[in-house]
Image (cartoon, rainbow, N blue to C red):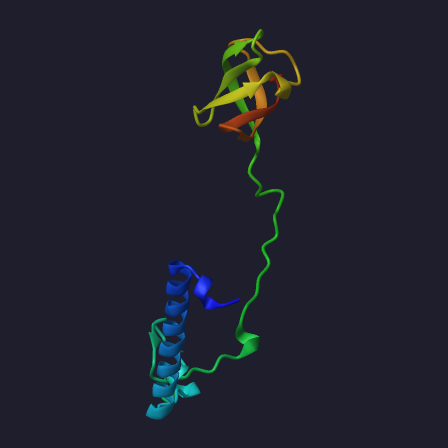
Length: 152
């Protein structure tokens, strides 16, 4: 196919591409003629004792030796005695049987916690004292496993 059938736009794109290619070749030739090579040492970066990145290597006199046996590794075990009590006590401030939701006021933190009918183990009414667990609901804390409080 001859170039006589090319449109002006195609000719312009072709000439731009040729120009870019020539510029790249010139840059490559210039780098070669300068003879400036980047060595591995020029590319290395160091971190000083304060965590700053520098181009100067660290001072060997400031080097400290760490003995591997002196490093303490501890695994914390959960003791059942120290575990917090997840069962809370509260008062039902509002409950709508027809809609199936309500709110419980925690007696310890006075926080209002949402409760849904699906999380009830027993039927509850307003002003009942209940025992419950706090879980994460879609819009905040939610009461789970709600049942009436019975003194033993």
